[in-house]
Structure formats: structure tokens, C-alpha cells
Image (cartoon, rainbow, N blue to C red; front, side, top):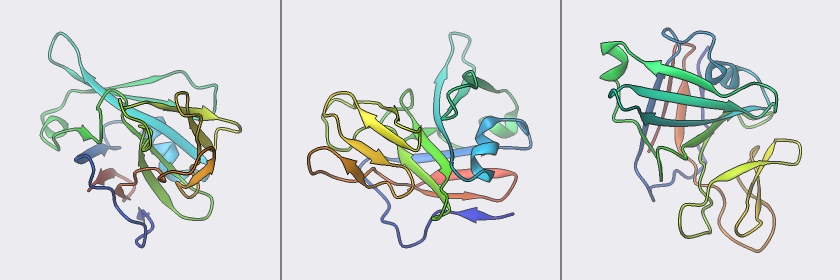
Amino acid sequence: MFISCKEDAPISRRYPCRFTFNAEQHPTSIIVSACKSPGSYVYIYTSIDNMGIRHVYAQSNDGKTPREDNVISTDREKNYTAYLLGANNEIGLIVGLTNFNGLAAYDRTCPNCEGLQPLAWADNRQKVSCSKCKRVYDLETGTLFSGNEGDALMRYGCNFNGLILSVGN
């Protein structure tokens, strides 16, 4: 199974993005499920704890699944990438399989607000909203669904081959 982002969609270059997730090391991760199940999306964000260990967190749009903590512990995983998740690693990305447009990866910050405002699940959790400007974005297309005129979500290139998820610009 090889799934990639829609090729004609513009890729944002506003912030550097390089993220790789190894499904072989985390086969039951909700990140893997979001890459395979239409309408499923996850927030992906990362941090390093006080012991120097990287954690890749995921939060599903289903409203039921608790936050997942994927510990990046193998040398192979540690050396994959710089873990640059767009505008801010601790806010991160939104990744999922759209119903009609394939795999999608977006920056989780509002493209229309200063100060890196994180987006939150909205409505039926197929959309995200900004608490500051009140704009709502459709995850199927990344476009503005409601609110004042503005930019669409910042989109990144993505591929999932069943074992490795790669997101970047």
C-alpha cells in the first residue's frame, strides 16, 4: 500500500517541515490508522523529555482515544529525521486520509493569525478551528470553511508506504 498527498496541491514553504514515522516500530499507533482509514485524522506533535528522550504524541479526531505517546528509542528512529513539524514541534501537524483526496498533511497552526495559534477539532471533527480568529478549515481540502476571508491551511507533502510515513516540504 502506497498512499501519497494529492500531487497538484501547493506545498507550504513558510516553515521547514521534515517528519518521518516508522510504523514497523509502532504498528498499533493511531498515526498508522489515520493513514489507512478515510476520515481519520490525528494531531502529531513532539517533544524531548528531561532525560533527552523524544516522544511523538498523537491525538485522534475520534474524540474517544486517549493521547498516544510513541517513544522514539531505537537508533534507527533517532537518526531518521530532524523532527521539524512545521511552525512549532509542540503544536505539530494534522495528518489523515481524506475521503476523496487521499492522504493529507497540514500544519496545525492557523495560517491567518500571528503568534502560532493551534487549531482544534471542530464540528464533526472533519474540520479544525482557530479560537483566536474563529475561522474553520475543512480537512478534506484544507480550505477555509467559514469565517473571514483568508489563507487555506498550510499543506505539506506526504507519503505512506505501509511502513514509513514521511511528511515534508
